[in-house]
Length: 423
Image 1 (cartoon, helix red, strand yellow):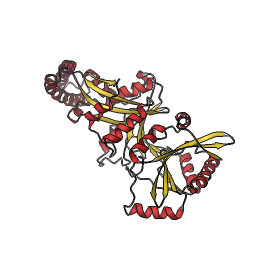
Image 2 (cartoon, one colour):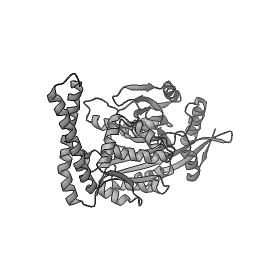
Image 3 (cartoon, helix red, strand yellow):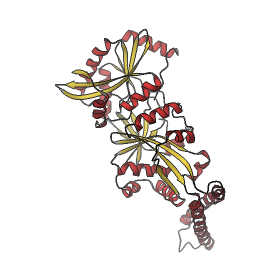
Image 4 (tube, helix red, strand yellow):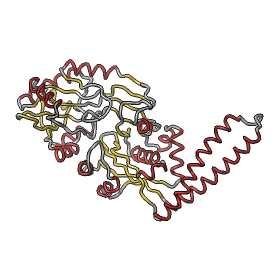
């Protein structure tokens, strides 16, 4: 096994076509970390019998006494099921980095440990991933545990959805609730449009967003790094206020007529012709919808007065890598969240990337606490219904290069003498 230095162009060419391609294993992400977090970067290739069998972007920095730590965001680009290959790479890295005063390498490979539905029920438990984890431990990697929140450099839990190049097939794969929400948002005159100028300054001014504790400078650098390779796109959710008012009036009128008809059936009490329980259920749903539409109707007059040309009510930043698209942030102006345009936003973005040939979309990280009493419960549920599921990665592993100094590092870390920013 031989470790070689790759140019960033050579690395990106290998990385983008790899099965474990991730936006975190790109030169664009390395640029973000060097500019904002004072890391340096190595692009390494793993050659066996003259063939490039793996690679990794390692970012690193000095911590104390001239000793350094390295991090491989989303792990090495390597066939982890090839246990012999993993062992050879591990031993070669140890030999190389020991000479350069590295304490350890941290990595968080995208090995799926479990899948769940959005009720928190386990859908699949991968024996192969457990075998890979056991193999890491045999090679003296230290597993950092199965944490539930954002304690790691990158989250462990994500919501993923499959894409399809056919919009109708994609739409039919959604739950009925999501289909109804998307149809209603279309009827209300929402649309989702990519920003042809990709104006990150306007995006930041509008969203004033902080993502996972990171500020505007970090988000701007993230965007610019990926925009250079055409891998970043901003989408806006637009409301045509003129059409919205017209459509809400019609929707309200139609629902009122339906509601009156249901009320008439209930008052007739004719159980020979109707299933009264179903009618009562329909009436309650209609009452709820009518109340929502009435609220929309009242607000539409103010909207058309203040914004006759229409207005942007949401903004989404997406980054692509390999076969996947990744939603970095999905922002909706707080006062318009009740209009529930987010399902349409997600659908249009999924449709956009499905047509481009991408196979999946990362709908964003979530906590691993699926309890109904969790404060994150509604946020987690909002990512369900898109032919999506929750995936849990195996988590962080530390490959220790210098055991003695690693103990000193852990002591300093536990006493707040060292801080390393995540994401």
